Length: 396
Ligand code: NDP
Image (tube, rainbow, N blue to C red; front, side, top):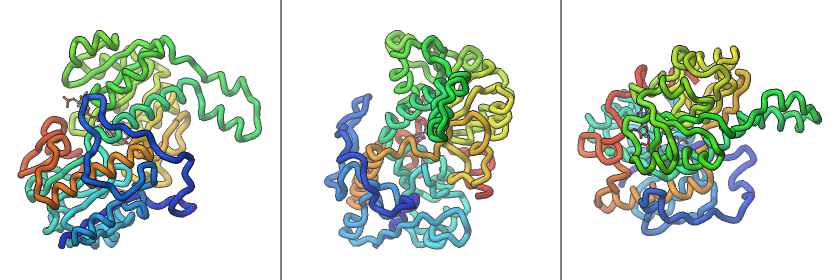
């Protein structure tokens, strides 16, 4: 019997299940590159349900228990006597979402002798020390592409919200005002602006595609160039490095993974090379931006505004300065956890577990670490050297 330890975010404050705004979510069968959405043998939930919180259990309980295994679900993590850390030594499989990551540090992995599989219900396994996972023969898998389009929609929303000054204007209405001058004195049109993405993979290129009809100038930098016909179709300009991109852009969106090359990439020096009054949107990983440099740039006006949904650590402590700095449009880490995305990654986790329990290989595109080495999607996108300073929160 295996123990499956599922670490999920808390239920809604008003209880579970919530009352749903809609009766379902659209059915998507393929991603833009042709890859099929998850194909488990069956699912035990209705797409559109809240699955990512503790009571949602990713819709896995009946399945896991029917296979004779034990499912343990908790949101309690990030302190030495948390349920997660207490149960980890008995766990064969750990599953968590990047929105509420179960940080699997080298020390915790060393204290988890039974652990054989770490699944990210979503995309981005930087909360797992991959070098330690390799050393201990742990397989790491994630549900590639499950929420890439969800995130790209969030990026477009945040760009529009910042440039149009939506959130402060909404707040005037809530506060009973009609202060048009206050609202519009920071409100601009996106049309005609230069918009650049750092990383033009699944999310970055979906952002470019979605922004093209806004009649903006499009830019990107990436380790690999897009095919020439895609560059032509999008009318997008390639920059060999990020400094060249930020110098010409009014809006910059970050869509590259966190690895040693990108950690702290947006520090005071790089932000200082941006146009005064540029907008910065980061839905990739909090550690790609220097926390305090972002605060100072929003205060000084070097950045007109900053938005995103990724922080470090997660959950962010109540005194995290990005909660209170001026001109921000931060959300908690939600862009990849829409109800539609949850249905896909819950199905993807089910597919991974079905294969695992049956002794069948996991889809190559889901693999990050396997057989003692980076594998599949991981071999392309990840490095074994984790973020400097580790992947574990030092506070909060
Ligand atoms: P992809 O792997 O499809 O794309 C990432 C792109 O970034 C690749 O083209 C990669 O190049 C490129 N890249 C890597 N390093 C650099 C660098 N130093 N400078 C410029 N480009 C670089 O990933 P996705 O688009 O699916 O996701 C991107 C990131 O977004 C994820 O790694 C994750 O951290 C984050 N994410 C956030 C979510 C959220 O809910 N907010 C949800 C899902 C993902 P190459 O191909 O050469 O490696």
